[in-house]
Amino acid sequence: MIEIRAPRPETDIGPLTEATNRPGVRNGTLRLPFTPEDLIRQRLTKPSPDVHQLVACWDGLAVGQGSLMLNRGRRRHAGEVFLFIHDDYWGRGLGRALLSALLDLADNWYGLTRVGLETATHNTRAIAMYEAHGFQREGLKRADVINNGRLEDSLVMGRIRPAPAYGEDAQ
Image (cartoon, rainbow, N blue to C red; front, side):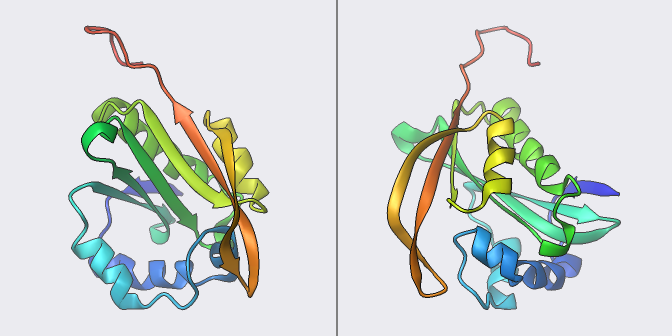
């Protein structure tokens, strides 16, 4: 049922454009409405070298996307995660599976110590999921985003992982 994989632009652009334009995705994330297919196409076919993308599928259909964006310079030990799941597929474990895969990349392949994110303060389901994965609330960005004509706060969250000792086996 759930599959987490690399993007396949030839099949994923349409379904991911549909998913990102759903009202729940728009209200729960910091995305603008009416995301054009060309923007999704560009993100999938010409990603930045500092962004690792994954797609969440339900019975073979792409219904969500997540990204791990690596920081540079003195912040190279850290990254940011971004994800969304199509409204009709919430509550099926897709977000948890996608976030777990992104954190596996961060921990076991990039060796990141810190992973951060921002979410809408009213997105309580997502906040609970992030907290279950070790994220902590770090701060509130007051009047940070306009949503449906109203200023709303954003919640900044972070997960700190101690660096493994040299030679220590990955868990």
